[in-house]
Image (cartoon, rainbow over all chains, first blue to last red; front, side, top):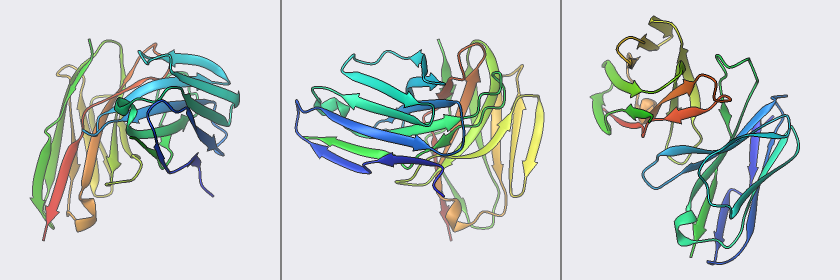
Length: 115
Length: 111
């Protein structure tokens, strides 16, 4: 029944490692997003894909690489993890509606801690 | 640039009414969302305004004035479970469905 799911829920790793976070939505939505929420709870867009095409790419280090194998999945790979990458990462999806009234539905979040 | 301002924290009493304000300066405004986020959980959708005026949904109402760049979320008959962060987010026109979020308002409801 879960609409937007993410794995893993918690991720603790060492600096310099490479890790991936997976996201899947079963809502039939065309657009998916990755957000980062820092310790001050500020939620900021990182990437967005529409039907497997990258449409938003904010100022994010190129150590972060999203991959969308199909429109129901958007994964996030992070290379050479740094302390400052510690945050909660949320995946979200929305139905493309021509730009108005597009409610985004969020996954449960992945809590990343880099030691 | 884009800027969204909300109070950092608010406290209210169970059963009371509270109004959470949001002001924004953005280019290409295409609507304003309010989300609720309980500690350790995902944001969940509360309301959407694109035209001026008040949208009512049960105990929650949201107001928008585009000319003033101002919105508020009104919570009536407060319950303890309403203790959460409330995020104001602006949708930008022509930006591929990008939402710009404010930093959120932490609401504490006391007995």
